[in-house]
Structures are given as structure tokens and as C-alpha cells.
Image (cartoon, rainbow, N blue to C red; front, side, top):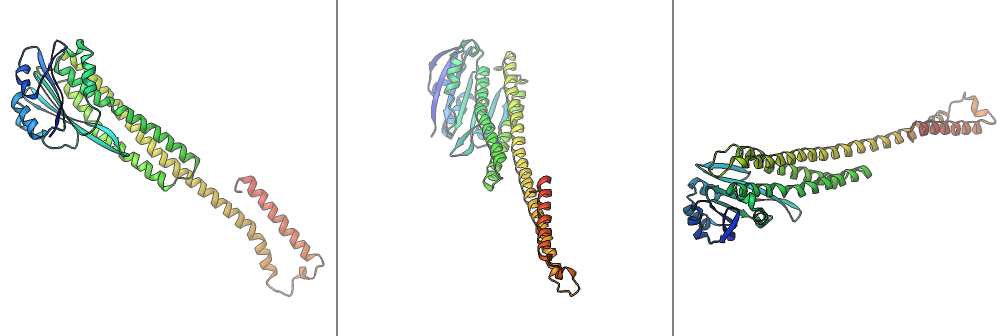
Length: 323
């Protein structure tokens, strides 16, 4: 069983009175009045009651009783049914909370499922702007959509900050499995955000062209403004995805560079050690005709040669950056 968060009648930009769900039908049919109802986790009983009062299309009710996977806009005669999603962080996981909106001549109903930001803030803002609220249902519809889009912005900013932190970590130390998992989680969240934000742009575009009695043509620029905000969010998501990809690329490049440096060091030391090993191998072959074996200073000469050669190789590799 859901609950009624707020239900009130408005006229000429002013709140007339609070009402119960059963009183809305008469008020919604009075000229110059509209009913604004906010529900939280409504069940079939509440939705069926609203269908009877406001003559909601049976397909709209059927649609409302099932959960959706993406935002959508459906029109039924002179009424519309809209599904949008708010994103929240719950125990470190990104979750999307569904909101259903019924709008028609004389009424607008929002039904929120889950613990997203309450729409009481929207009601307070609208009541504080009576000149705009005088437009009626279409302004409330705009305010609800704008509120949903606004709540994505702090989340996008958090992802920006987190990805910048990841980039700094990758530059300071080798890429670890935890870093890769962290970046992959961010990329997955960004894909989910795009899935739920992307359709809103088309929805706002469609709202600009709907010829409904309760949507004033003077409200079209407001819906265009929401579409612009959605477009900017999508651009930010693309930039964030590129940041995540770049973080992986930078980490791999740095790891490859570190590996190359290590390999060069091993190769340099192997070359330095190979020279004395080769000389020792030559004098360990036990041939009889080796004049150096009878030379009085042969031992010291070979040691000097080995030392000089090793030092020369070390200096050469050091100068070339291999050591």
C-alpha cells in the first residue's frame, strides 16, 4: 500500500486547498483549476481509483502497473503517460528509481517508487513562483522533469572527481587489479546512466511538439531548455567515458614503459656480465698453445682488461639511459 505525499488544487498560480484522492475528480473539471497529486509507492488500488476519477486510459493503467527498463512517453488521446528515472547511490551501488507521471487536462499525478529525492521540493518551488504556476499542468510537468535532470548533475560531478583521482593514482604508481576493477565499475555506471538519460532528450523534443489542450505553446521553450540540459549531460557522459578509457590506456602505457625499462636494465647487465664470462670461457679451454698462460703479468692483465671493459660498458649503458 502506497501513501499520498501531497494532493492539492491550484488555480491562477495559487494553492486553493488540500484534498483527498476521492475529491480530485470534481476539482479537476472546474474551469481554471487543476489537481496536483504526489504518490509514493502506490499500489493497484490507488492507481485504479485514479483511473476512475480522471478517465485514465486502460493501457496507461496497465503500463503503470508494470515496471519499465527505460524512460518512455506514451500519449493516450489528450493525456500522456511519462516514465522517468532518478539515479541514487545506495550502499556504493548505482540504482535507478522510477517515477511515473500522468498528465491531462485538469490534473497531473506523479508516482515515485523507491527512495529518490522527494518531489516536495518541486511543489515548494512551484508555489513560490505563482506567475509561472499560473500556466498550470504543463509548468508542473516541466518542473518535475527539470528536477529529475538537476539531480543527475551532482552525480556526474562526483564521477568527474573520482576519475580525476583515478588518473592521478595511475600516474603515481603501477596499475593494479583494484584500479582496473574500479575503472571498469565506473565505465559500467556511465553506460547505465546513458541508458536512462539518453531517451529523455527525445522525450523533451516530443513534448515541444505535442498539441495538447493543457500544454501551452509558451511552455515549449521550457521543455527545450530541459532538452539542452539533457544534451549537456550526455556530452559529459561521453567525456567521462573517454576519461575512463584514457585512464586504462595511460596505465597500460606506463606499465609497458616500466617493463621496457626493466628489460633494458636486464639486457645491459647481461651484456656487462657476458664479457668476463666469455674471457673466462676462452682461458678455460685448456689449450697448450696459449702464450698468455706463460706471461708473467697475464693474470693481472686479464683482470685489468675485464675491469676496464666492464666499466666501459657500464658507463656506456648509463649514458644511453639503460641503467
